Image (cartoon, rainbow over all chains, first blue to last red):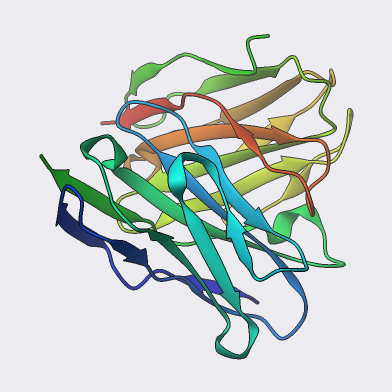
Length: 115
Length: 113
């Protein structure tokens, strides 16, 4: 069974600092990758996704992520965070050619941005 | 469009009581999902459905039952609630599961005493 690991459980940054959140997965085949964000009191929403092609994908609100196949990683980055980026971030992996029950989410990383 | 809605938003149960959580979506999605979110454990899939009249088990199905009698609704039932089922429950839907994002509801916070 596949698994998703988000190594940083809680990250605290000051505004304008750069952000990188790690996401590693274990699965031998082809996968689709997603980052979701959950702002305080709100439901999860999609930040960005990767299916194929350019391994550097850009999402909403200035976020980007890079897929490194050899490292089984899909790290989320943002050059300069804002207070409004305070949220919980989830990485998700969906393998190809499986059923819908194989969607796997990481444990989440809580980001706190100090003004 | 309302997207994905969940009823109720909060609920407190006593051990052994039963309840049903309702999820509704107005996007004509085929796939619907129920997750639970617990601190430090992220989102875990309880049950899912690939279309009207279908249901399937996810990662943590024990203690829960589901039904999808109508395409737009996905119900999650707890027949005999246990304190271990204290959690936040999220419903989600999608066109299909591989390439499309899941749209999430606002969540239901359930406490079982």
